[in-house]
Length: 204
Length: 77
Image (cartoon, rainbow over all chains, first blue to last red; front, side, top):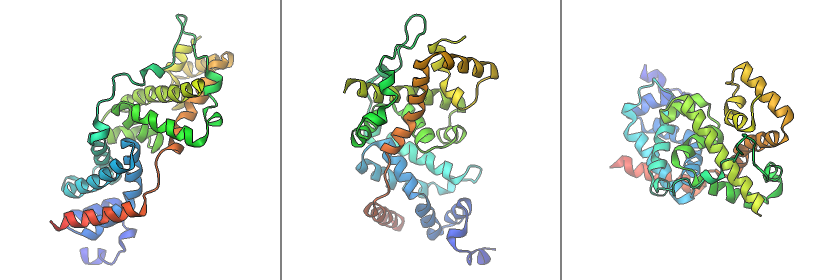
């Protein structure tokens, strides 16, 4: 079986078949998985750890962990989900990302309501056009700040679900939480990030 | 009839179409009479796109080369 399989180009194999070979000690198969996922893992690491040098360390550490733990990949999950879980945990435990943020640093940007439940969002017309009003570079800077200020539980959900565009169910599998918890954290994260971007526009 | 606060609380489920048809209709009804919440919904929907386009970058070639070297060295040990 293996002799026949050996003729199949690695690029033609699916992730799980490559992982199976990597588990059997095939370094080329593992290298093919790295090739396949390095872009995505780097982008994820960059968003979770917020600067390129930390992202590079996370990228290296995540693939090293994946290689060391490949025996524990059992094929009952998709390889991508398993790898994203390792990468996400590595990024969140990395020195800078793991640093405690001031409690509630973005909570001040949640929407405000009056006693009758009316939205007291006076800058709403301006904040709705945040991307039209701000220079691109300035907006990018503020978006990165917002990510950096998000508490890591919110950041992980927001990055996986809204930036990496996973489904709610896949984000839940990566983070090992319920889809309902993903939806709740995602909503709060969006409210805080939206408020931060909008508020900055209102103040400028 | 939902107020703004109740409406905003349900936005994620509204966009994912997880609401009951009754709640969905109640939000639509609120939006029809509330420009603030329409603007809020718009900026709420735009937020992920703005951050997505502002963050994340392609893997630089030198980082890719260092990753390959790093993994090769670690696997030799």
